[in-house]
Amino acid sequence: MMRNEFRDKVSTDWLAVDRRHVWHPYASIVDPLPTVPVVAATGVRLILEDGQELIDGMASWWAAIHGYNHPVLNQAIAQQMCQMSHVMFGGLTHKPAVELAALLLDIAPEPLEHVFLVDSGSVAVEVALKMAIQYWQAAGHPKKQKMLTFKGGYHGDTMGAMSICDPVNGMHTLFSHVLAKHYFAPAPTCQRDEDWQDRDIAPFRRLIETHRHELAAVVVEPLVQGAGGMRFYCPEYLRQIRALCDANGVLLILDEIATGFGRLGAMFACEKASIAPDILCLGKALTGGTLSLAATLTTPEVAQTICKKDPGVFMHGPTYMGNPLACAAAKASTELLLASPYGKRVAGIERHFKQTLLPLGEVPGVRDARVQGAIGVIELETAIDMARIQPEFVRRGVWVRPFRNLIYLMPPYIIEPPDLEKLTTAVADIVALSSNAR
Ligand SMILES: Cc1ncc(COP(=O)(O)O)c(C=O)c1O
Image (cartoon, rainbow, N blue to C red; front, top):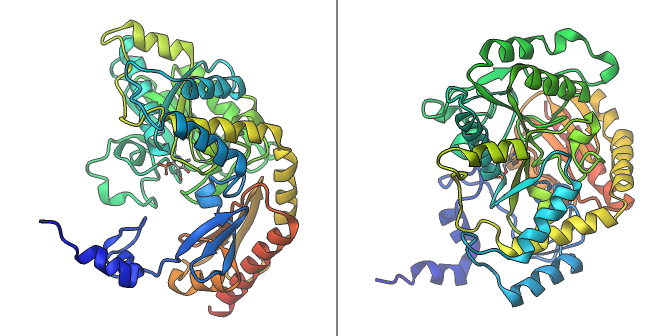
């Protein structure tokens, strides 16, 4: 029997239906925090139901690098929609997927030559883990099924991805009994190549050398540990890790889902260390924040080894794999990025963050203030009271979504100085407010 009761409620109080029935990320259905109703978004602004405009400091979880409602992205999606929104990718192919793959390979570091298109970052990570395991099976080393990663990492919310997220402070301790067991090195701490000391890599080296016979891959977020704690580390780690992977016969998976597409000024973070992975995960900004799409890229060595042995194929194939709309959006977004002065824009954001956010490191109650590319982070000594702080940001006309004890900014690259100023001023205000409330 069809029930009308929920739709009737939407017409009278849709936010009440949202509160009671629609589950938001990392949210309670019993005691939900208020959600902010947004009706449109354009440029760097979110437009709320009551007409208020918020300057977006989050780029919708780091994806909307060109801002919202971009005519070039809109046109690419609309044009593709009139041709074909979706067809299965099994046995069929289409230009949007092939053109996107070619573009990604042209900008990705050599020797990446194969692209597997999936629907979200977490799935791109699952695919990367499966590729590594299938590679070693095909290469005659079936015991190599474990991963080595850093503590403090974040790679997504699906089971395989969770198994390599931070094992202690991550959001996933609840599931620890069903998650695959992997190896964790201490989170990297060295910030500058000039300060590098061999002891920085010693625990990692011990782990890879001890467990090389069971390790399929090392998996890390290059240079920035994002949702696991917004921590930065220097390129020398990556160079050392690449060399240790090679010396010990272990694949290197780089998860550039957060760092890819210019967030640190270079197209990919691994360029800053002049290294290339065996498997690369991309997502988030791939479509400029318009549609869900991610990609796992790999080398001829990995792809051909997998496909030359039984079962002769890579064992993965999501229903919406290679969705043409998302591929068209991703191609348009990546071309837009390449045609833009994104390196200069990111450098401008970084300069502004350094001037305005780093001094906040001196405020009582602030443990650390740090900046890397278009990422600015204020780490407080205590967890943020979201019920109190979120409305304070909205009152100041900005959209900033802290987590745990971290207030951070990752705006669209197109943000102009006056809007950037409003964002950082709001952060300074909130930091003062939190400091006074101690
Ligand atoms: C580095 C990294 N990997 C993977 C993911 C998961 O991506 P998605 O949320 O699209 O599943 C995220 C998301 O924040 C991420 O930052």
